[in-house]
Image 1 (cartoon, rainbow, N blue to C red):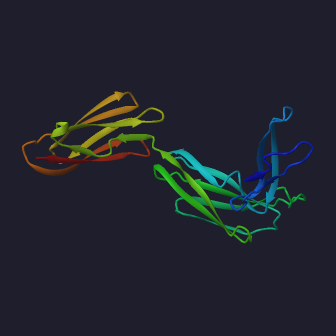
Image 2 (tube, rainbow, N blue to C red):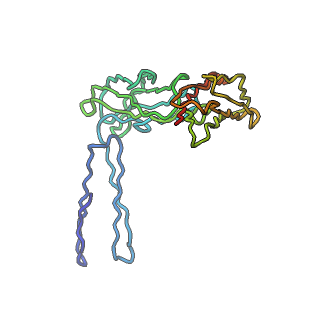
Length: 258
């Protein structure tokens, strides 16, 4: 935020007073102020405000974003650094037990320049091979003995993409869709997909398996054969594949006959 003299008479000077709220910042800060005037020789000026805010800084950022395939372990490395501080103690805890964290104390000497970062810890955040598929939003919290930053929250988010995608995940059969639907099983990465068996239950659920793209995609046609009996019925279609992450796929089937 800046306050400034709007008009400066010839031969006189003006003032620009800039205020920076440092509550949300740590580490080195570079803010700019753009000054637009009617001076033909200096129509536009850019002023820089540099400062160093004491406390704990997470490098390169206070978040870790993951984009991994199902069954793939992935690690992000962050650095816990300080400015103008002595040595600190740091402890870390994840919001979910399946997020693995490791803190390693670094033995770098304290910089002679108080405006340089002192890298004190390396933080490794890992989502393991058995991390569930889908989008996720979690966190890792650091507890320190720094008087300026007792706790620091690091956002841990991203998505784990399955190698085999099944659509839809639930089958609903009724008169509107003529008591039949199609399940698609698609290998998103690579080739070599094979389906060796399709089992349906109860017997009224009939299935027909077709390979539509060799090594990449199959379809299973699901039909409810008994349309005379009234009521609500539940069943399932079980699919056996050669995919290591999804060897068995179960799709619930719900039938409504009025």
